[in-house]
Image 1 (cartoon, rainbow, N blue to C red):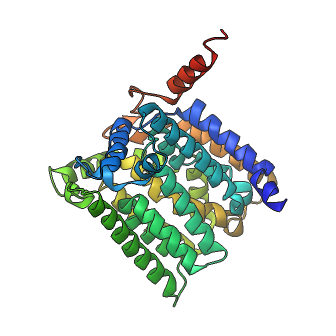
Image 2: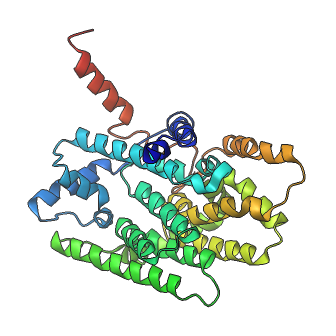
Length: 361
């Protein structure tokens, strides 16, 4: 009975419904422009021989799910991606209760834009595992569970995992505590080894993400993009949570926490500056920072007026609407760069409904 209550808690349902409004009405929802390629990679697992050399292969979760569910139709693969993404957003809402009154505010940050616009990438798994890692560290601090979540994060996307685990360590390690650092480091190595075994098993012969970064003048492009659009990059990662970040840094008297935030922020900037899809990566890397700020906000920031405290979430949402989705992906986008995709969830729903009702209307 308690499990059912927690699954269908009013706050959880409200947050999920609010996230649906954000995803489908305010941000807009789209599959990544590589969704058909993700499907092709999944189909190649049936043959046991990987003919593709793109580094999309090394973010394998949706490919493996397509293989396990024996999905051979592209439309059903796309529908599976959307369904899993929606279910995991609900799971994320389930695991935000530790933020209490700030749980809804977390939905106003850039990670949800990324998840909405790039369905088919591993970002929804990255978001979930980072939330689970932070939650575990804050409360139970079971290092075996932290190891498991961190290894899964690495398998999901090892490039983002590398920098995000460093950020988690900077934010949450305690003085003279070695176990957290050892756990995060060993879990990354373990996850990377498991991923490499998988890639060897499917005979993947493509170049790694690291090799891509150091080829074809990629570094010139990404650092130029980041330096010339730095304000837009920062806004795209935090969006409405930017209000809480500024207030925390300005009003909090805990200098240690402020230093941790600043150092983590610098690592997030460095990590995202190594990617062409800059805002997408940055929005993932600042998830631990957003959680840190929102969790400690009312513990470290004293606001004299209760009216201001009650109004903050509304103001955060207003700021989100004003900032809009300023997403750095080669250039600045205010709507998904994947809108002209070969398929959308809305066209899929229309097709399935018409097929279901063709003998009725």
